[in-house]
Length: 105
Image 1 (cartoon, rainbow, N blue to C red):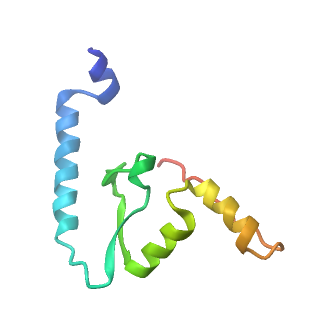
Image 2 (cartoon, rainbow, N blue to C red):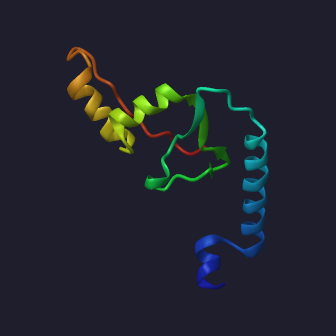
């Protein structure tokens, strides 16, 4: 087994993943984005997010004003940092906003 096969899987599995991503992209591109909406990467590309991750589409359709507001406040921060920021600056001290990573199923 070559180093690239150990790292990325066999050539057949890479082809299958590529086909899956292509089909998901085609399906997503068929979704009509209305005026005032745009695409938002749930995990931003600058933090390693792509279009398709772990069998799930990493993009959602959001209102442009909400998307702009999100990036104005949180830029491309990671979820734990966003959670910490919300707790420090925005939330009533009697409450705590908690960020928990989902376990793989």
